[in-house]
Length: 342
Image 1 (tube, rainbow, N blue to C red):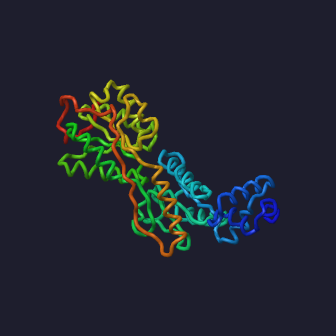
Image 2: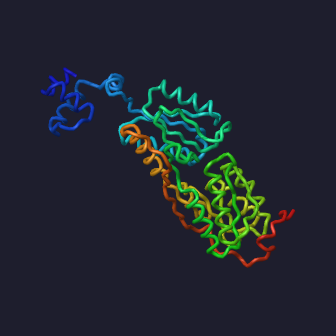
Image 3: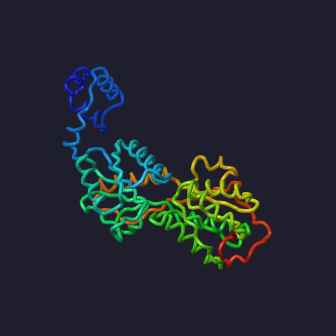
């Protein structure tokens, strides 16, 4: 630092202010100092700065899966937002969603020197009715039913589902079938609950639930079952990948989309507009979820008193070519849900 100060013709204190990003330095002086740093190959000692400041400029992220679109895009958004604030991200995947594994992950992150933690809780813990996190760590939780116990950021799953189901009912469909996500998922549970509630509120009988595992393969398997039901004219799939498999199954069984069956997905992945036909789907703003997570965790670090409660990021329905009014009814009444034809 003294060498940089001599070359730039300033004090060591000014070099310190520039390297730490503090205000009170003119732009011309800042440029001189940065040029001297570059010429001498000077890099601030991050470990020493962390000890002096009491922070490591690093946010830990715990997640249980990188196999789903939502988790990957949320993680990407968190990393981008953190970088914009001058923070790095340390990722720690947890293989099994149990309380012991979560506690172990927090211990490992503390050893890795992080300032706060964001937990992407897409699945239920297997050994607990509710989430329990270390009280001394600043934590923000994504996609959870933690309610007011923690700071939670989530997509408005219920609002997006209501928009999708009402869109199909408004087109004239008697009811809407649901290709649900896995039972252990918070997002899948909320979308299923909202689907059932919206149909019941509209005076419609919810058909039997068909379940997948978020993958296109599971959507194809479920789609073969739904394609065998002539009374099925509209399907709300809990994510776009399963909707893709569903579209393939309907095509293989000669059920045209949207002339015979309308299909809606959830997520609005970048490829959704390139499906055949282009997929009507619910758009999730993953970038906003990531930004709000980082902003919330930084506020918890910098301000007295923990924040609690849930912040919901709005969704919107993106209407494309996979939905249309139903064909003339040829099957049984909409509440006669028997076994599909052999």
